[in-house]
Length: 117
Length: 114
Image 1 (tube, each protein chain N blue to C red):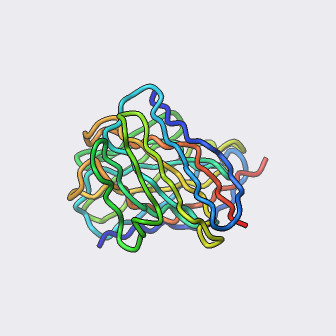
Image 2: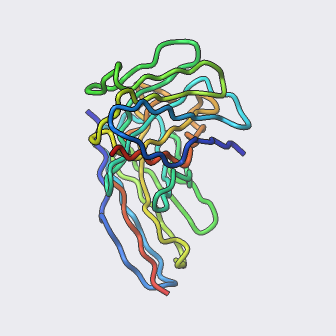
Image 3: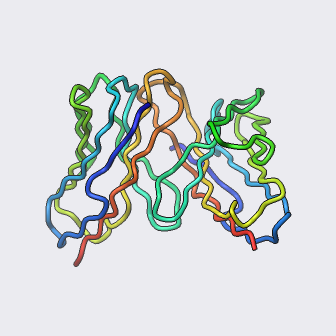
């Protein structure tokens, strides 16, 4: 199998706090991981592509300084929401690619529900 | 710009019925197409992946087809069960970013009544 673990699954914190979310590929190495954001009853929107050992590639409209991504190893990528505000409350999901072929699906974590008070 | 649309947005069927979920995309230059299942408050489970050179894939009661020329894919679920209730998402991998980003449709929320 190809298992992706995301932690924490749920976090509630005060406005102004920075929150770190971890995404780990448990049984495979992932050179590329992706971070998505999902609002209630809406689809997933790609925020950034995370490549091991290099800077992340952010989608248009996503603030790099707000959403810090670190892909320090082949099994771990982290997303830090800096100085979080209520509008950052959302469901954040990561995914990882086991390989680059057209036959390789993306494997998703279970998501992190972030609530900023 | 690639856009992915799923119809219907919601569907309710009695148990045992066969059903079809639709996905359309505007740019036929795709690398692959994936169907996912999402349960409430959870991440995504990959159901089927169709490479751009393929026309269909099957797994158990699920069959996904792909027609690149018309920009369409369908997910067929046979003999539906209450456990199939979930949101089904279609996602296209663009050819220009092979093996990379996915562009998602809005999903179809399926409810199978016992």
